Length: 247
Image (cartoon, rainbow, N blue to C red):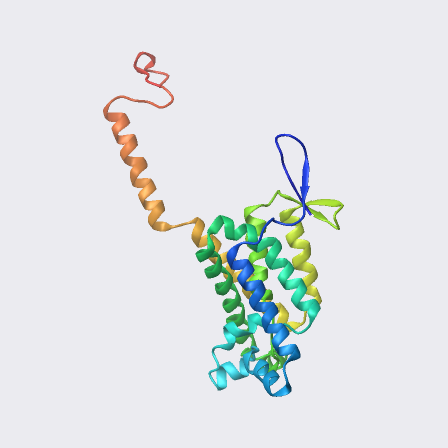
């Protein structure tokens, strides 16, 4: 539960409000995939084995579609509910801010990036990597962790009510939920979660610092200062030239 400020009185609202377009479509797609594979005959359920992310199949058989398809599969009802709840809670408002196009770009970039990192980790010359190499990975957790990071960075001080009672700033709430999910998972989950966070952080930092935009800003600022000096305009005045101040 999250509280929204009101000019008239304090009010409370559960969740982020109405579903945004992309979040609604992703929710439907994930639930539909789970229901179809859950109730489908065994001959169709085999399809799920080809859609799950298995690093060995990506490397040896070049089943590269698994880097994206695994995001729409979930191991259990609980797994599906937790991920879809995170998508709804944190994705809805981010889509309103970013727009549907960038939201989908961020979502799939973090999910696919998480899969790529999982494959890279599985190729490392360590014992734990050998287990990851043959282990199927399913779920939207990589993308959800990217959304968690983005929400905490965009709304660090927004109160979220844990258990509907305890108000916690969003940045701490995200850390708590992230830590619980991270330590509850195994080696495969760790690689996938970290991949989503790493790609999400890289995308957000790139969006906040655009070298071309920064160059244009510096050039424009230089031109403004040059005009000010030309016409003896000083933004704050000069102590040694008090009779020529223009504010």
